[in-house]
Length: 84
Image (cartoon, rainbow, N blue to C red; front, side, top):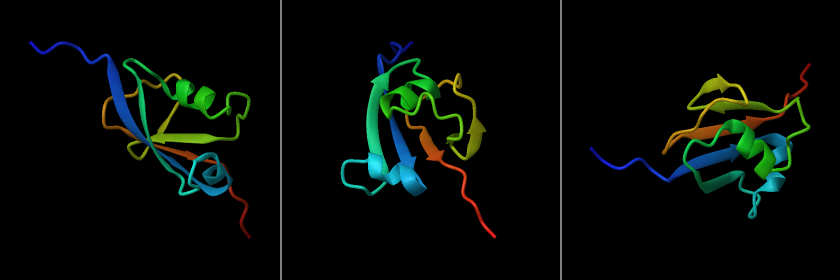
């Protein structure tokens, strides 16, 4: 049986106004996190913990802040947009 992972790699896509949080403003960041990290860890990492309006999706499915992350996951962080 393989040893459990100590770290995982995830791809984070920051949308709309959140793109500015990526170093090159591309909105795409590859991160290495401790195994058993949650979406809440990403909110802390990007200083979004107090922003309830940010929506998270993991692999295309809406996710709660307590949703666990796995190696290879794609996480989208989006702010609501107004349209008309």
